[in-house]
Length: 296
Image 1 (tube, one colour):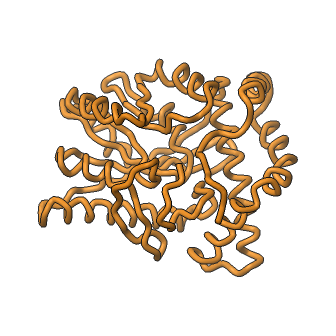
Image 2 (cartoon, one colour; image 1 turned 120 degrees about the horizontal axis):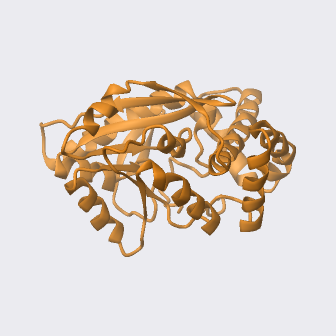
Image 3 (cartoon, one colour; image 1 turned 135 degrees about the vertical axis):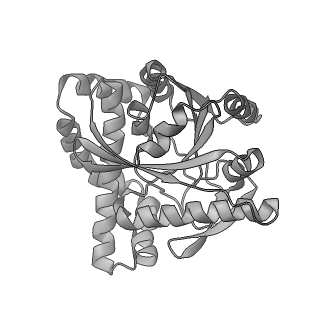
């Protein structure tokens, strides 16, 4: 059994502040180089995460043993890059973005009603905040509350000028009130739909050929409120560029409430599968995503 994974950004607050300071003065590729030198030691210190990634490529993508080892190495390096990119953005660095189906997002911005954006831990969704934000409609981003003070502080500082408000997940469920209020006010709510954060209610759908338990909350919210839903994937293409995919996620009118919620989750699982097949090294779950356990 792998050790409990927390979803928290690695490094002490001092190290994270130092990295931001370094990236203010140097090219982001310097950060990649430093990260690459430390990567073998990082992987050696987390053998269970390495095994999880190896099994992911072997079982879900049906790679050979050698190819699965290479896939795990590329995955850890890709994860290091997106983490560096986040700190680089905190340091004021900019990246270029290509947006697919731009109109599916911006056509909703001028409407009075709000809408839901479902994200995942495939790619680097945080970077979407710097490109998809608009002064016409506030975006409320639901995120894990347990990250370091430095990371949360930098996120708030960088995203606030982009008309983005952060809603940390709280144990007392106060975030649910904020989410409903934002949607009632005609705002955007962006939230991950692939990772259980202490949530007991789940819905099982196929992802990459095997049943995975997704958190019920995001899908139930969309169906019970009859909200418009978009799925956004932000995938790294080159060292200085990202490709943003915006996908519609229609809600069916047929069946019971539970059946409609399950169908919506199933369609999300199909999109997640499609993108994971296209970008296999950018799925950043370092625990058994297909297990029954809640990991953070």
